[in-house]
Image (cartoon, rainbow, N blue to C red; front, side, top):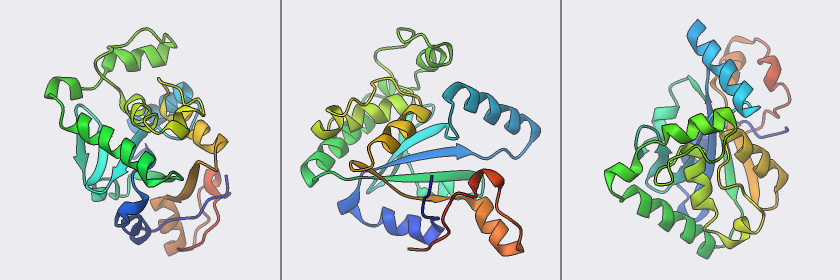
Length: 210
């Protein structure tokens, strides 16, 4: 995939333009140890993709389904251990507003309904769609719920129970509705600084600046 390489400043600039939000954020935690490498390999095997977490970028921060559904600052994912893909939703302000309103309703919901759907993620790993808690969500399932509030996206057949890899494949299949704004990868920043070649899996990225 040809994509613009984003800097930290680019990410903060995107976060500071509320008229373009919400945006879909896909990430993967870069392995920093042997156990991390094993985890990344297993995740890629399950999702058949290079992303393992999804969030929505809202004006107030990143809405992320972890142990609970909450908002964190962008700096949380700028620690040098995460690669970030940004997808801009090419929707009108009414549809963007519908997605934003649904996310904010969930963030304000009862704490129990914001807990992670561990049963559902097991169902994903085992490819058993009915194995889930209907009152809770895992990260990409929560994102899909919000995104489907936009009639344009619902009409394009976004799955109701996708994993992060499914979300990425769906986004790339619909570039006129979901536009890849770019990718932030700290490894490329390090490679640029020391003159080394970028990681082989990322050589298709176009190094441009916004």
